[in-house]
Amino acid sequence: MFKKCPKCNSHWKNRNQFINDKRIEIIGYQAHFEHLEAGLFLFNHYCGTTLALEVDLFKDLYNGEIFQKNKRGSNECPKYCLNRSELRPCPAKCECAFVREIIQLIKAKKNKSS
Image (cartoon, rainbow, N blue to C red; front, side, top):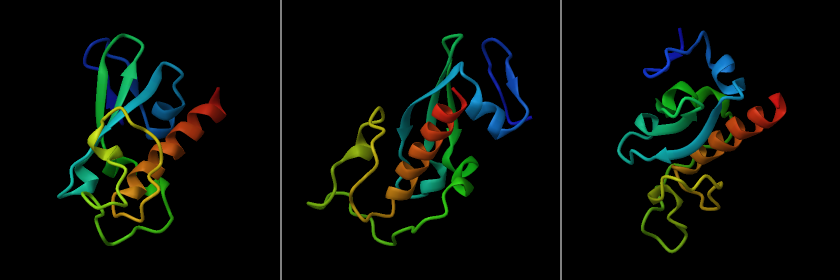
């Protein structure tokens, strides 16, 4: 089993089933700057629960470039990762940018399944 809702006991056998569920909506990202894969994607479920899943569970969706430098605090940084409800892709060539690209891939998969 991929994930189970603690409130209504809905469950998803795999990640694709979870992403394609019309009752799930990605609403945020909580950054973990020391270990990017440990950051959390936040999803709302129709029952009113917010589910938090680690970036690591979605990392293989992205096959683009992963930048080596963190631009947080620089003039290049738009500070998107500091606002958990900000889901736009990051224009900076920052090591965190790949996570924001994964958000776009999740959103695109959800739009495709609608």
